[in-house]
Image (tube, rainbow, N blue to C red):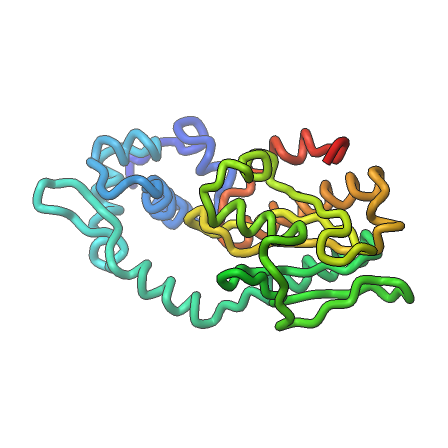
Length: 259
């Protein structure tokens, strides 16, 4: 019997709604998730408040998490994250490849829009193609993995610069989370691009769609492309451990009129 355990359904709906079916693990995970990126340490009282769990329950869980290296008690009685998550993160990073997340989304994006979908990262003054999927169409934009272009030109270049530089000229792109290009690098090509973020809000790269200016240059086609890119970037960001809600307002207000 554990009479001091609260009824999680009534005291913390967030845990109940996302329950794994193993209550003790849900509560332990809730304690770990109580720490935000800006939190170096939290008190027992604050952990209890954030999770909706009784202090006595929190103490037992903290002792178990501390024993496993997931939590650490400081000299002042506060708690911080232990070393074990770092070890697991290192294992995850070694086994993780950007392609495993990005390529399926590029394939879906290319199939949906019938244009070339690609993912760029910045390499100094250049933008590098690290992944791409081309449509089965006779007339299409063709690029190669490993190919690089001037970062100052093209939709993906604008996105990469907007989120790696502080130049105020990119403020609109930072605000709406997308950029377009009409014939900048190639006079017969149009493109749209959006940023993909990681767990710390860091820029992972630019998700991009490119096509002939005669097709993608039409306002209606570009608007559909921007909306699809934002949704794919939202999904990719979630997969990378980032905050997908960052795209909510952009998806609601995306319009290429006057872009």
